[in-house]
Length: 353
Image (tube, rainbow, N blue to C red; front, side):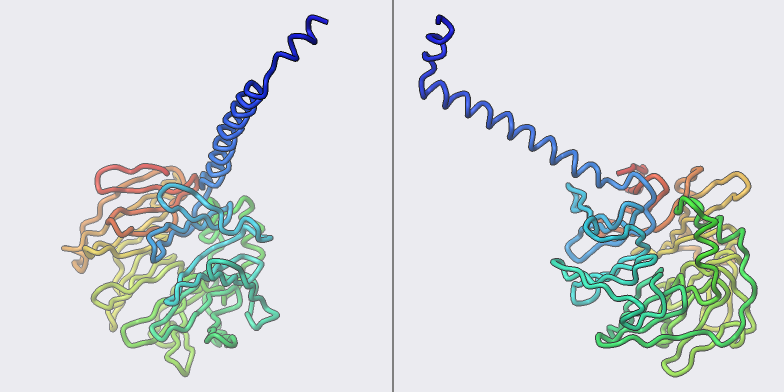
């Protein structure tokens, strides 16, 4: 009976205080849970590609999906899609995004909803490795079965006519063994002479396509092999960029090379995965520089000696982990992906995000 009398002493004020205390506790819990959800999107696994959109957000193509980082929060853009096997992302001149997937074709994202394009819509393959927008605003896709051109209405697909040199399987495995958990399965599925890893438009408006076995050049009418045109043989071309002078830098089993419109010059024999040129004119690369010991490096080729026979090279970071895509952010810092996440170099120190 005493206990009942004590219970009756709780007035509406007491009850209100208890309810407020409970709500405050729940609110605190919600914040903690949200923080944990956000933290789960931090790309602490392989990051293949890094892009910065017009708003300044970072888009990280990781093994968890495509993650957007606004400087405070990590958001998995692709968490509701059926695949996490993404390889590249592009923001077109209209502010829309194109996402390249391995096995699910291409996704078009307008910031609100997704539209999926596959072989049913005209793509030559559902495995897409590169997306590029040319100066006319045409979107190009580098697929497992060759390049594809999308004009906003339909796809037009291309294939190389010439038989390219054989591809070194050990080289292909070396490049991607840090990215896929089963490199043997990846190699068996994707071994094809037409697989396009890289696309770049030269100063004359020709499009270059880097494949496992060769480089194809499209002049708007004809698609030809670089082997047939220049008598040069390139295998496992993974990236190509055009510098401020209009020269094309490309990589592959032959190392890092520069093409000035007439001749190809070998810059280094060391392994190169990704290539960019920063605002100051320096060339940055990532790659496996010592395959025997599994050493990868982020390297900078000094702008002042860039076109010399032996340009000055600085290894900013070396590690026994895969180093992949590179980006110069608007603040001048260098971001690069790795097998354990994404790193940022501010000119003095390298930090992981």
